[in-house]
Length: 430
Image (tube, rainbow, N blue to C red; front, side):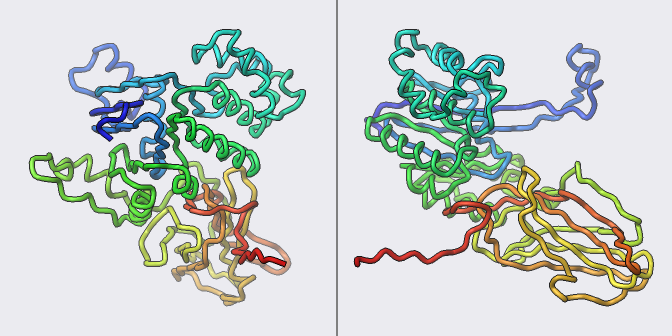
């Protein structure tokens, strides 16, 4: 590796944000009207080193909030580092957040020229690439309409077509492919393979572990802004799975190398506070008569470890602890799971399962445990919980918590749709 040309060099990279309890504190500190700091420092990235060589495809993985997108934004110049060194050797094309670099009032053609110019291409060079971009995006006459009228799928098709057909030396992609349909994603990954054959450099963030495993030469694992390791995709995916269940241990430092574990901030990066493990949502929709109260909730994996991330195919349990405040004839305890767009994917309750059909008395406490195998595709989901029942013919909601907690499903193979049928496929000669 030492004799290969560096495409990206990152050394001692830190990105620090100041957090304030009140807007008033921010104002006082910015005006110098306070003797002591009124903010606390949050490290989005802490002392990160990273070398990417020309022609490599490198994936960055990690849980939400680990600093993956932040490091890409710093490399592309969207954000500035607090300290450290970033060197980029080559022309970059980046596909970051949906909409970054696009003018929503312009039509598709105008945005192609705008993006190409921002990357550093002349109008003539963009003219030569225009037909390839339009064919790759395949959005028809919508290319002449303002992009504010596009669906998210059309938007990402055009954005990716521009990024990948402008012929950059370094391509950087941040999870944007998850917006397109499965056929467009396959088209993009074929383009990745073409890029690799041409000796281009690709750096991308993805929750799709199968894509990381298939396309990457190396993978980098981040957690809470700390680089936990880098190595083969398999090694880092295995380490990532340990992070998800809170069982990852930093390796012992070599002689003469500072012990990162001595730093309390780094130690904090390896653990997760209980509130975060539970994945609580501060914007939960809550209502009910108050005759029962959902007092606690959490998710555990197959080993009983508190978590907010489950591997597809693994068994997991959703726990709900309920205080009964009044006598109830036959309460129904319910669970449902939605995707982030609000579509209800699946759910059940104690009445459907015929697992509890009894009355309860005031003062009783109940723990309800829903245990099942995770068959949903990789992605982010929201859990809702409820205690309801019938009083005569009247349906009553005693306590309901909509979107009370988040759940991440980590998958190394996604099929089409919301869930995996776990098909067994054979191809035979006939």
